[in-house]
Length: 429
Image 1 (cartoon, helix red, strand yellow):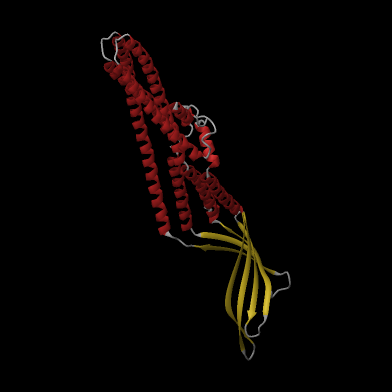
Image 2 (cartoon, rainbow, N blue to C red):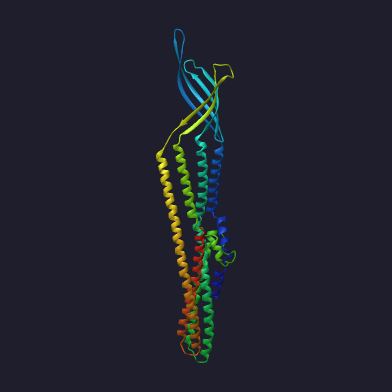
């Protein structure tokens, strides 16, 4: 009775498919929610870069000191001035519209003069072909994609644990089925032996031997149920649900196929390499001179009001940094090597899994033939035992051998299913 209660306790659990378990984990885990926040941050960063590419507002302020000389017929006057220039600037689709407000302060006379002096437009011709903002926007997008992959990989350990738990439970279910069938058969053999005992054809030791064998199988069955119970509790802890809610469902192999994500490491390396190439292009662009063309209207305070000077100017700025460009090139070379090695390792892994799959198929064929052989042997031995041609111990020896072969075949069948899923995923990368 105690044993039946124990089995009933361990047979109750939750009814859950693998997809449902993973969905619950992703919806309830704190790490998944925090990763969504990280993704939003990177997406907003990309959106900001995209907006800055077309529209920005800036404000610059510069100060200077100068001396103004004036001369009349008899004297030369020297005035000291402090000048501050404020330049608001609007960048719109690569064209900068700006205005200058100048403030002069005369130190000797303590006079203060504040006036609008110029209005102009300027564009960077180099950016028409190599836009820094475009590179920044592209790199922000790549960072967002890499963060998406990295975020998924952070949860992959727990997802792998969930898959492993379902796989373990599948193995436990196979062992339980085999041992329960063995117990049923031994109970039938015990009933037959009891009849033989009444007829004086068997001894009490035969009954005790069968009882011992049944007891050992029940103990093994109890240990399997206990291990399966622990696995289910671990699953509930991972996905954050109560254990007593429902009953554990059958695990379908196609459920597991949908969550294997071995391609993420290669995808991450590809995005990293693309990001390194963008950085190299950006460093190359920084080696080029910035060539500006500007049109400006200068207020002429000598002429009449609303009169001024129109001007067109070309300027350039050169700040090369060969060291940064060389570092970017080396980083690209290293990224290409990492990606090539990852693809080579994937190819080798695929060939290895194919070889293991073929070996597993051969092992299953051999195990199946061996199991069928031992089934026939056990059937013959059972008949021989019934006809008093062999002892009960000899019969049980063959019976246990058959049970071991059944367990081995069951585990090999599940193993080959795992190889098939692995090969399918690797071929799709």
